[in-house]
Image (cartoon, rainbow, N blue to C red; front, side, top):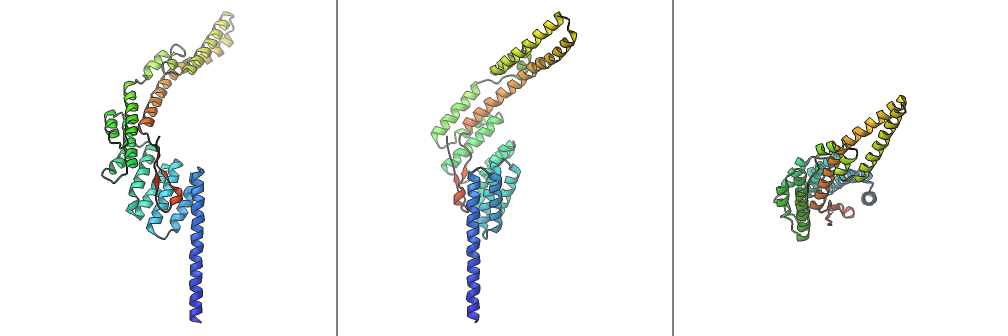
Length: 292
């Protein structure tokens, strides 16, 4: 009788374990599908559920890391870092994938100093060819945003792939040779409606500003000539708005021009896109590095 009870208990335990494994497999497939579909917050919740249910530290770390990746793609940088904290508490083996993700989280939140700190922490780590180029590109992109162009050059020379290095160095050289627009000059030129926009290459806005200001100025001249002072006052009020908009618009256009030029340079210097997690490989941590 005791043997029979023992066999029944063992069978029940085996059935329970198999059912739990099936549940984990279904949850993992659901999370991967949600991630591929771009529903990153929902995927993150499923990965957190898997992390809480996992029995070994490596699996828990992998699922916390996957949740951090999903939150990062949802641009929830603070929550992504919190998931990475929990992953690194489980095992130190997750360190490099976690730091790579922390770099992008810091850049996404605008904390360039923190991003550089994480990149510096990768110095001396065993990085592969693609990982090394990604790190060099990220470091160069941060240096460009900080205005440290010489440091960007030094970072790019560390790239392993010559095609990436040459393209990035060419983009950086072109950026150095180009010139930013001066916002103050854009504002002064804006005294002539549309000219401030044209200074920064926004010709459609320049034409719009010129036409609208010309129309209102013509209306002011006509109503004053006909002595329709009420209409003159209304039209003058709107013309003051449009005219001041030409001045401030020239300033903003210069800022936009400089930002576009900087972003284009960073995009070409920091040439590799973020590494993509292989969602289907979990609980094994795997990153796929793409290139342009």
